[in-house]
Length: 228
Image (cartoon, rainbow, N blue to C red; front, side, top):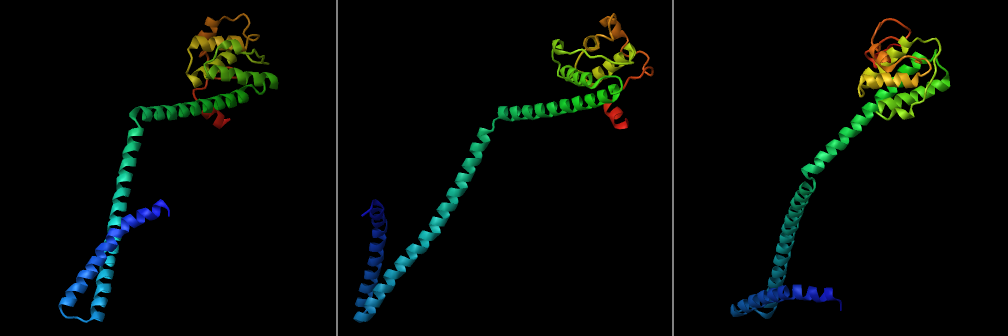
């Protein structure tokens, strides 16, 4: 016989004995009242069955209450554990991660706009190969990387003033570098066109004659791309 059977016997044997005692007491009571053998036997069965029924009803009722209380306790305990697990530091780290993602999305969107602007401005004045190189240079500028990876490109029929305006527009669009770096960027990228022009001179002419030249100063590259 399995251990579980012994446990059931130990659990229900006292209940059965108690119910039998109730039946016996009921039988003795009716014997003393002068009842016949059949009646006292019926009384014994009824009282014993009544005791078992009462136990079953109370057992079911209290089991439901115990299970309900246990579920409520477990729910509150789980909730408290969850609250303890999510510390203020973890919440702060989550917010920082979300902000970093948003920042990267914004940066990528700005790069996309700058490349579209560049394509529209230089399509007529640069070969496809040089245009692709220029896109890569813009990404380097946007991500604040070292200028040592910049690759020079050449243009056709553009003046130094056009390139200086382009430098200002890119500088203003990203707004993550100083003007000295914007001037250096133009000097290195358009090294052939800017031969003999020094970086201080480029810097001082980034915003001069805004309406002149083929490439003009733009304060909002997004609007330029939408309108062209």
